[in-house]
Image (cartoon, rainbow, N blue to C red; front, top):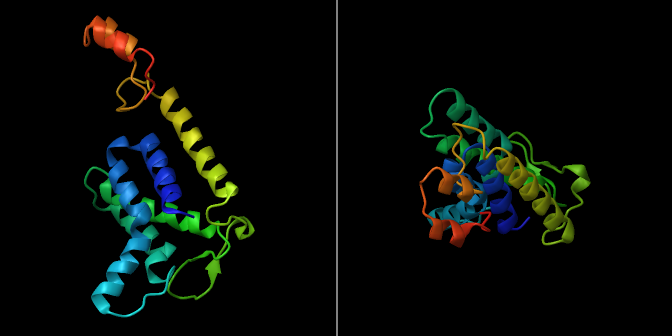
Length: 175
């Protein structure tokens, strides 16, 4: 899948769970690809695409470490989960993605029928983003939750936090 799909899926999933960690999830969702460029520049050797930087086991171990032992604001967890999301997106494609260092085989999900840049990729990405948007929209009225999307300008006006001109300016804004 393309980077825009990795970014959109990771950002929408993170926004539904922890909006404050969206930058970490976005960074993690592209990390396996751009870390190959860094390794190539540092070592001077060719790095195989979807090789060591794409191991699912590594990112699951990091996510487990972040969730159970140490994490600050959920950023390390969402960085690791962004990498896991990247792995799942790559595993949907024809060429698949590796699970760990113990095997050279690549895993494909659902037969690896998604081609990079195809309508199937767009449909999967749009479906996940739409589903996450619905989850975020339905949670916007839950007290005590931080959701910086889908502002309720009518409620902000009623509570006296904004004035009438600001309400009129933003009353049809959803995001």
